[in-house]
Length: 101
Image (cartoon, rainbow, N blue to C red; front, side, top):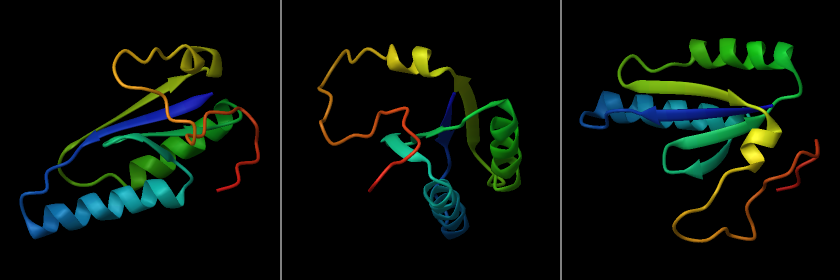
């Protein structure tokens, strides 16, 4: 399964900017990969792991803004269609457990 996190956080004040940076660093530290500006994804093995990740994510939510979580299967994720632009060759889109960065 794949977790997709979408977020739209305010960055109008220094506090908001700090919260945004803290949340983004949390996602990167937890192994989420950036797909777009405010879209991150992570592979999870099963529903138990998904529930643990969901709980960790809820603990790190910033006080303001919008954060959304979508869980899709790998088959659904693989059916993403690129409508504009191109798919870069260096992006990581694999179901293998070992990812070397």
